[in-house]
Image (cartoon, rainbow, N blue to C red):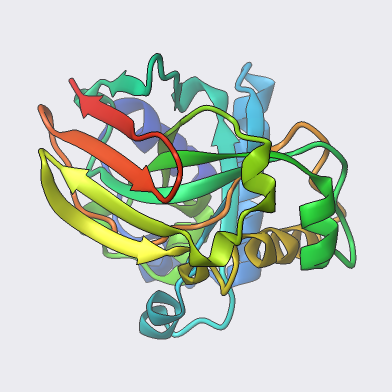
Length: 256
């Protein structure tokens, strides 16, 4: 594992953030993906389970703010998947450093998707879709990060929870689905499906092509968090987050 990956792992385990990696090391995006991949490989070697991928920076406004021309991605580590029962789940707040939450659509792939992927390929390969609350978190102090920092930091992965998988949702117009995220009963974020790179399946197709550039692909059985549908409010112990997306049951996550 590289020195930078070791720093991130130490921050992940201890909850003590580190200064921006880009400040002293001048990371390029390509080098940052190398750090991310090294960190992921080391965690897998220690028993971590990769259950899928997450896509970040899918919002055009956020990409413009970060001065980047494409999204980024990270791995979903199963040790931070929180299981819902009856539409409710809990996550221990002390696990995270500076958590925020996003409302998203998760796609479960029933077939491999790889090089040359299009929206049509992704939709054809989709087995089911679920609503998801993603917890984003940063091992970088005070979220003072560049695009290279967030790439290296596994795309600011914190954890996630899924609602029930729906096969019928495959036939919905995902780009028009509305999203409302409530924090302690108050509206905290709103959005719509097109916020995810124009269409959630378009974001997943981008991911498949990006992975192909590293000699990888999205295998059948992968869960893909397709990107935030609105801005991400900060959360703390005691907060209760409820996600509502058109024609889907609500999903609630409480930070204990």
